[in-house]
Each structure stands twice: as structure tokens, then as C-alpha cells.
Amino acid sequence: MTKRRVDLEGASHLALVPGTTLLHPEETVFEAMLEGWTRQMRSRLVSQGSSIEPRIRLVRRFSEFTNDYPWRWTPGDLEDWTSSLTSGEKPIAHSTVRSYQHAIAMFLDYACDQRYGWGDECESRFGTHPVQICHEWNMVSHANGYEGQPEVRPFTRDELQAFFDHADGRVEKARRLGRKGWTAAFRDAALFKVVYAWGLRRREAAKLDITDFGPNAAAPEFGNFGMLSVRWGKAVAGGTPRRRNTLTVFDWSVEVVDEYLAEVRPLYHGGPYLWPTERGGRISVDLIGYRFIELREELGLPDELHPHCLRHSYITHLIEDGFDPFFVQQQVGHRWSSTTALYTGVSSDFKNRMLRRALDRAFVEPEEGAKQ
Figure 1 (cartoon, rainbow, N blue to C red):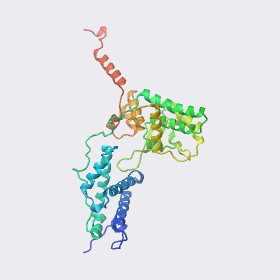
Figure 2: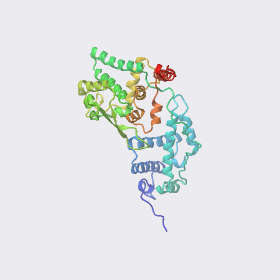
Figure 3: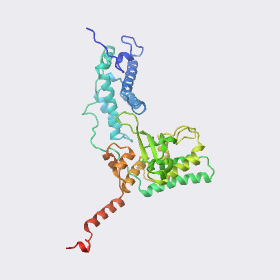
Figure 4: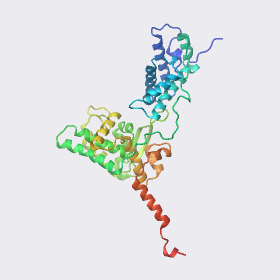
């Protein structure tokens, strides 16, 4: 009785014609294996740009590091790769290493799954087959609930004001000197204020379109800028970007966007993009980072501050100003309140005010009529 093949997306016999002679067998089989994995992930609705492509790049990177193919990888290869990632002048973060290892483990789960036939294909051609090299004992463990860099913090209110003032100052200086770059400086100043005012991630901000702003019936005073539709929120476990509507809470932010759209945005040719480049394309996430660093260094702010700290600041300042934590959680698109709590870095002044208020309640003298 012959073994019946199942035509699963990603099966080896759909990527390679069985029994054919290949000119470069190892390279061809490896490429077919990657293509098969891509098809298998697509069939599970895994996001192409945010998950599939980065995973494929990582597998290629690991193959280049080992200078070998998956059917000859060993657990020692993973350990050597991990050591290389965590050593040197710029070791990568604990959480990043784990995500890299997880990608290799997922690829090998696919390659070793008998339903897809890659084991038999490799055995017949190379006399060996892929094995899972990622195990509990050689992978980075998820030891902590929060693995961000401990030095990262929100802006203080004074730092934030100085940052925005400096960005505005660059615009005024460029205008005064008649420089063409004043429009880009204006765009960047408005962009960073929007990132803070709606608690955005860099990618969420870069992907905004003009039409993403809309009214909020509960806050008519904000006009057409009462709500921001965030269409490119952070995806979960390889899924599609999560959407959310973020309500406007700062009245000054409406003036910022209104002025930018009225005076500067018409000078660009960028289709629907809220933040176009001089050539009419959409601003990149990397460019946001570069512009932020320029401003930070010119102002002499600490190196631990980066664009995501604006989002930290938004969360912290809303909490300090008395907004309900669940409202803040919904605003920034966190699934769990614990995540929002980890982003919160309330200032010493705020904590001292809370302490003083609690002490005054506990030790205030009772009113005369209440004395026994």
C-alpha cells in the first residue's frame, strides 16, 4: 500500500518535483523549503510584512552564520549564534535574542513535520534530515514580565517642553534664514507632538494618513480632530496590525495638527500621507528615529531618551493628571493593564503629592464637633 501524499500548503512535493536531478541541490532545496514555509504561514494568515519576511531573513542569517543547511544544523550552532548575538560592543536585548531563537524553532518545527515531507526529501538527497535544535536547555528563558532596558524612562515635563520648544526653534531659525528645509523642520516638530499627544509608536505615526483624524461626538470642541484612527497598531503573534481609535485629550494638539495641515502639508505632494517626504513618499520609521536623535543631541538631553519615550510620557502624564488607568490602557492599545503599569513612570513630585495627601487624611485633626 503506497503512502498517500497530502497537498498541504508548504508540502515539499508542491515546491519540488520528486525525483528530479537538481543542478545545485542543496541551495535549491533550501530555497524551496523557505518558499514552502512562506506558503504555510500565509495559509495561516500570518502577516507578510511584519512576521513572514523577518522570519525568513532570520533563517537566512542563521544559515549564513553556520555556513551550512538546516539538515546539518546542531544545537551547538544555536548556542554559538546566541553567544555571538550577546557579545561584542553592541549586544542585543534579552527579548530580541529570544525572538530570534523562537523564529528558528518555528522554522524547524515546520521542516521536521512529517506532513510536509521535508525529512524524506532531505534523506533521499543528502542522507540526513532536519532535526529540532532549539530546546528548553539552550534557549533564552522568559524570566521576567518586563524585559525593556531599565534606564529607559519617560520625559519629565520640563524635558518634554524643552524638546518641543527646541523643535519649534529650528523651524523659526530656518524660516528666518530663508532655508528651504523649514517645511521638513515644521513637519518633524508637528510629528513628535502628535506622537506624544496620542501616545503613538513610531510605526503607528509613520503610517498615518490625513483621513485618519475624525470628530468625536462626545468632544465637539475638538472639531474634526476629536479622534485618531490608528490603523497600524502592534500585531500579536504574527497576526495583522491591530486597529484602535484614540481619543484626543489635549486641546493644544488640535491646534498643532490644524496649523500643520493648513500651512505646511499643502506644500508637499504625498497623496494621503500625513507625513510625506520631500519626494512625496511616506516618512520611514528610521527617519523618525534619526530626526529625534538630532533634536535630542542638539538639546543635550540624556541618551536613554528615544522616540518611544514620548509614548511612555503620554501614559505617565495621563496617570499623573488623574485619568482612569483603564481609559489610558484603551488609549494606547494595551491588551493588559499590567503592560500599561510597566510603562508608567510617575515623577517624584507626583508621588510626593500623593504621599502628602494621604498623610494629611490620616493625621489631620478631627473637627471640633467630632471630638469625644
